[in-house]
Length: 320
Image (cartoon, rainbow, N blue to C red; front, side, top):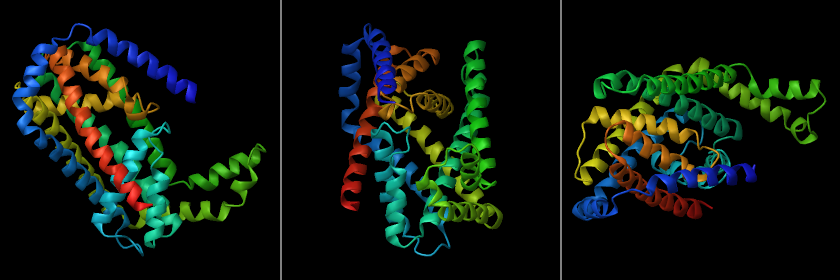
């Protein structure tokens, strides 16, 4: 896994180097200087986005014994997502931290784990909706968009939608117990998993209970995620305004959604380094914004990410 991560990072870095070779750095530096006094505004949309995504998690946990206050969940999520992004664990390195903090607050292990599994599934489903909305708007935003790029976008969304649908269906069919049974049938079930079969059954029960008894809360949690994505698009609008090249909100939404699709391809690499950046610049070219503006967009978004990742690491350190 480590060698694969390094290979992907090397390829992405090479592509980035080739793309950045002809950037007009003088113009870009001037744009940064012109908007530098307003840079703190860049931090606000993601803070609001995280608030709604935390509210989504809170709705999933509502009514469960020991569920912490929403502001504590905000810190847990901030810390967990920093660990997700900064560790080479396919964006899952912070989930054990979140589960541990919930359990320390009084939520049982099965309920804590189930809330994280459900929340991750809702994230994928909401992202699919977000990308589909952007694809519906793209012909109006970019009338001359290449049919090949549109087709590739639909293909990527279809794959993501299939993964999200499969994830949701599996959650309703006792996934943990079924997986243990499959491993046992082929003689590959390790003793450590067999010893935890009761805990796996409890997790299956918690998932089934939520989907059968709290479907309304699940829908509300999904809507909160969608509001969060909308605020994520506002961040793109703010960035291009800071660069002195304002764009409309529909274009900002389309660009952001497709950036999320590209960034998902680099989930094996910490912070999708290189993949996200190169993809963002390519999309900026496709949106007729140019490589220089695309590079500025990438740098400012990385600046925002660095701030919130650092804040999340501080929250994780204090949480321990």
